[in-house]
Image (cartoon, rainbow, N blue to C red):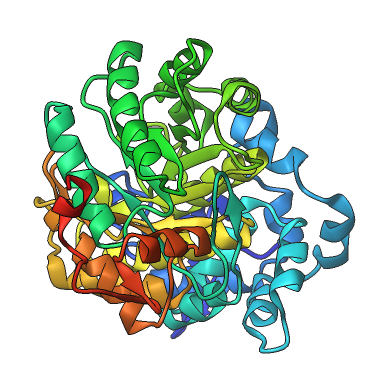
Length: 454
C-alpha cells in the first residue's frame, strides 16, 4: 500500500488511509477546525492522487475506526456481502469511479456492487468526483420507499410539509400545514419538529395533524420528530405513529451523544411494525448531516464526509422510508460557505443513494454562515437534477422555530414544474380531487389554505 504521491517534484507522504481520506476531502470548515484538512490545494490534489491508486482492499483492511472499538464499524462490516467484495477488492478507487460513471452501468448493477462496499469506500470514490460527476452518478439511482404511500418513483418529486411553530401552538401548526398542502406539499410526510419533547406534547400535536389527514383523507404519513424513545412510548400508549424518526451519526460515541444505539433503533423499528399505524414495510425516517460528529467532539480523527458515509451505513440496516441530509443546518463550524454546502449536498445525495437509501435533501443554511438564498436555490436545483426523492417544505422558506433557511412551498412547486416532475401518484390523485392540481400543474386554487376551512 503506497501512501505517497509526487506533484511538481514535491513528495507528499500520508500517515494512514484515514489521513489520505481526510486530506482528499474538498474544503470543509469542520475538517480545518480540528486539524484534519489539507493545508494547501496542492496537498489536497496529492491526497486525491494517492487515494485514486489505493485498492479497495486497502480501505477495507484499514477501517477509520477499528471494528473492536466502534459499533458503527461493526454494523458496516457485518453488512458487507463478502462474495461481492472479493470480486472487486483488487479494484483501485479510480477504477470504481470509472465503473460508476460508465454509461453502461445500470442502477441494478450499482446497487448490487454497493453491497460489497464499505461506507469508507463509497466516501473515497465520491472524493474523486466533480460536482457534475456526483449529479450524473446520483441520477442513475432511484430508490423508492413505501410507508402509507410510495415516494421515489421515477418522474416524481415529493416534499415534507414541515409546519414548525416556536411554541407548538396547534392553530399555528395547522395554519402552516394547510398552506403547504394548498401548494401540493406533503406527499413525503407531514412532519413537525417539536419544541417540547415529551409524550404528552407529542400526542397533542400528533392528534391535531392526524385529524387534518383523516378529515380530508390525505394519502400520506405523519411524523413528530421527537427523540425515538418518546415516539416508542407514544406508540405503546396507542398514539398514532406512522414513522419512527431519529437523527443518526457515523460513530458510536456520537450516537451515544444522541442517546441512541443500534439495539434501540432495532427496537423502534419493531415497535413501528407491530404497533404503528402505517402499512410499511418501510417505517423509519433518519436525518443526517456532515459535521455532527465534529460538533460533538466524537469524530475520532476522521473527516466529516467519511463519517457522513458511515452514517448511511448505519441507516441502510433498518430499511428506512426516507433519509434526509441537513449538512447546512449545523453551522459555520462544520460547513461555512455556500460553496461548501453545495458540495456537501451533492456528496451526501450520491453517497446515500449508493448505499441503497431513499434519499432526500434539505439544501439549507443558517444565517451565521457565509451563504445565501442563491446558494440554497442552486443546491435545490442541482439536487433535483440529481434525483433527490424529496425536499423540505417550510412556509416562506424560513423556519420560525429552528431558525434556518430551507426550501419554501413556492420553491417546491417551482422545482416540480422546471423539471416536469409529479407528486407521488396517490397524493396527486388527492390534489386533483381537491382541485389543487390538474394534469400535473397547480390550478388557480393552489396557494389558498382557506379551502381547508370552508
